[in-house]
Length: 148
Image 1 (cartoon, rainbow, N blue to C red):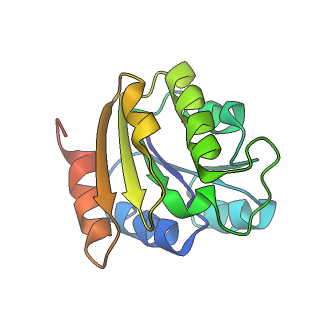
Image 2 (cartoon, rainbow, N blue to C red):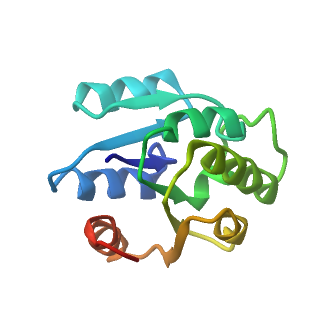
């Protein structure tokens, strides 16, 4: 079953994508622009683009995915957000979308002080990782593990 990286078009998300492409397995990406989507598609990585603050967009991309890796930077960087004005509201949108999609595991990659705990309340396995130079290796390990 696939893993989805939400915020694959952030610097941290790109590093996670690079690490995850080194393993066997299904990988998808969610980004905010068609240019970012095109770059991922050119690498053979299925990608969707949409409004990162719209729970139906991220939920649609997560449909059928077992694991979603959420990059906190995507909740508040320079990208356009039409459905949520604060990082907390973006996380709440993601939680609704992932719950509707039936995601079983969520990995919150914290690159800053944005709180991802709303994702822990939807009934999926949840783990939070602070992004540092070893984070992609740790994410790679967690995605391959039988349990968090």
